[in-house]
Amino acid sequence: MNLRLKYTRLLTGIALLLASSLLSAAEHQTELLWPHGAPGAKGDAAQDKPSLTICLPAEGKANGAAVVICPGGGYGGLAMSYEGIDVGDWFSKQGITAFVLKYRLNGQGGYQHPIPMHDAQRAMRFVRSHAADWKLDPHKIGIMGFSAGGHLAATVGTHFDAGDPQAADPIDRASCRPDFMILCYGVISMNDAYTHQGSKHNLLGDKPDPKLVENLSNETQVTAETPPTFLFHTNADNAVPAENSVYFYLALRKAKVPAELHIYETGNHGVGLAPKDPILSSWPARLSDWLKVRGLLK
Image 1 (cartoon, helix red, strand yellow):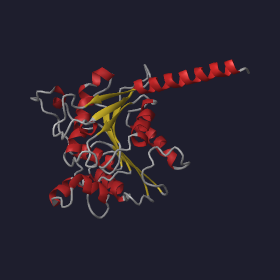
Image 2 (cartoon, helix red, strand yellow):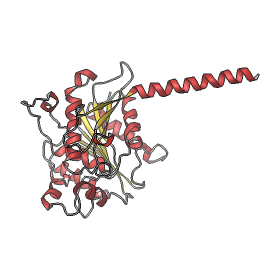
Image 3 (cartoon, one colour):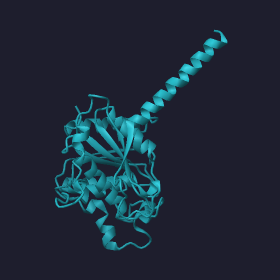
Image 4 (tube, one colour):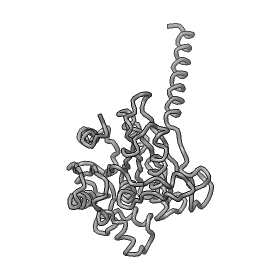
């Protein structure tokens, strides 16, 4: 092969790579939850602007279901890749429109409760109020969370309202109740016996009011109105004990809320989709099965 041909092929390869990158970026458009400034914002930096990154299914493949994804990070940071965009792409390939939430944090901006909850509630209202724009069924919009993001998702799933019909902002008129929840090695509880202390400190500070701790120990807030839930954890998780998922599942069962719990024996905390683990990588298939049971996946 002569030098000119090699050079031409190299340039072609680079052009294709750039085109692929641009296409990927186009697929992941971002929307600010409050375009004119978020309530309680402490500044005008990126960390003060909660947003949704949208992972759209291929043209004609959307099935009407949607999920808001809350990445983990101990309320101090956000694992936006392996607990966010990667997961959103997994959903979009199955026809479910995904919205990855960038919520405000103590570790980036000094935000504590109730700001993260308000951001996640706003995300649910935002997606539901714009359901027609993305061809979504407003009754098939759920929430998913990993680790501390699991606590945030569980908080929204146990602390919701029907919206304010008198609100000036039409988005605030929509309900923030998820139609389903997916909690992956979630913190869920603020109880000292099995919470993640870093997440608790970042969210609630040094000496939180015991009543607030109880209110945000979401296993104690389950009612018959709590959405159907899928839970995934590992027995070997030393960062966030599996009791978080177990006690939440038992509360759901007591309230007669449909639920499914999977606890793998081995596996570290923070595995995301676990693509490199021959055992844990099967958990998304269990989720697919559950989504089919719930009528959310064909």
